[in-house]
Image 1 (cartoon, each protein chain N blue to C red):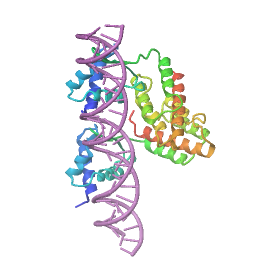
Image 2: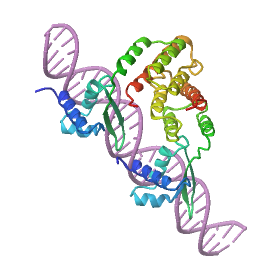
Image 3: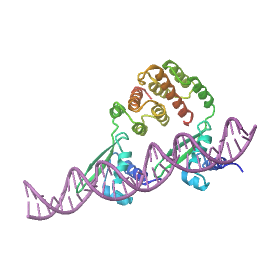
Image 4: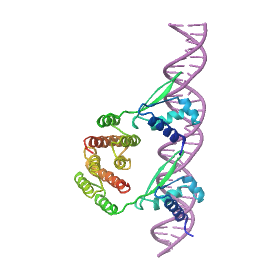
Length: 155
Length: 155
DNA sequence: CCTCTTTTGACCTTCTTTGACTAAAGTATA
DNA sequence: TATACTTTAGTCAAAGAAGGTCAAAAGAGG
């Protein structure tokens, strides 16, 4: 694969997949050693690939016996999951976070790949040609509306 | 002898042909070195010879482990129809006309019902909270972008 | 010559890697 | 118990590694 962060991301996702929904608990220093990188790279990977928007929950503890625990957010029912996303969106949404959310919806089988691409196109900053504080608000509005449609559309 | 851009174009097309439909992934700097040209020449080649209109899809990533990926997409008969729609849209689009176009795409089996609903949600005047001459321009921009992804997304 | 395409390079943006410094939690000790 | 030490993890900013943009200069064709 391409770079350390991607490799670590994949490794963690494999652990998660193997954990049968239980989540994984890692030692930061141990993983860093295993992949021969600095410990803080783990923080980078987590911050860029295991956020709420991506559908993960991260807990940690310092000191002796410390750990980092990553859990895939339970997507109880479709409606609760989508309500959760709506919560994350609020009144403004960056393009990055929008993409994370779309990715998460795809991974949770709420939308298809093509639907995801359509949504991303609608939220792209190139489509939304207005200045920045407003653009993020607009993006939020559009995605909220789309999520409502997904909520109330039978497959 | 032809020029550098043509040579690089051909080289990339050979890679594509050999890739068996998988697409190619290149390192810009590496190719530039190989052909002894500046890296940005790759951007020129891609922009002039591997556009959507030419039937290619290009993705890229910057930073460590960055890449440029080129994939060929088949766009049989759909393409003229969608090009026609793009023409109709132009630089502005009312909500009514937008709905007509979405309806038409659905009837022509270019999108599913759910996709249609998603698109309508994105184009709804309630989502697009800006004043009127701009709102129609914005709606046009968004739909044009969406049509492009429909064009270049294989089902 | 005039125009269109190609070539080049300076400058920009994004993503990743690294490490010094900080904060918190556990453990031993006065 | 209060204090000091040790063990973890967190933060943040600088440096590094790609790719992107844009416009000027150069070349090709008519």
